Image (tube, rainbow, N blue to C red):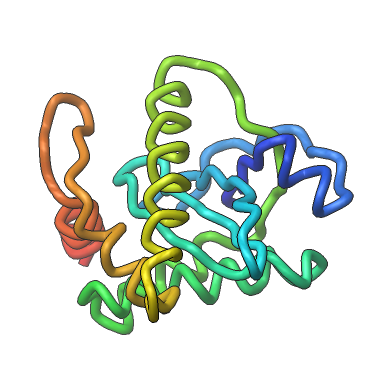
Length: 166
């Protein structure tokens, strides 16, 4: 089970009430924090809890966002070099999804800072002529981040975490 920890802005747009946060699930990347980016079209910017992998996808239609999100994660994992079986295992372990609100505890504050940075970067890169969502997602995977004092690219964190499980 995985929590989609949405900002109030996104919860309002989705017209859903947040559920209680679930117990930690079996997926390796942890919960995901999501924010709404008011662009054309409206986008959702997401970041994984453990490895700070960023992801951007179209927000509409909101009713299918959770299902589309899981497939977008799978596609992003494949795009950064995760073998198909490991990507499928992570996708399947994410189910079922629970939509909940972001929460303010120490790790979440760092995570929310990353989410704000990724939202700003996605908006900036979107304004560049001809940047597709796939190109933005590739750039987010190669955006240097610090997790627990270790500086690395999210792509490397994710590959290490998902391939050590094999």
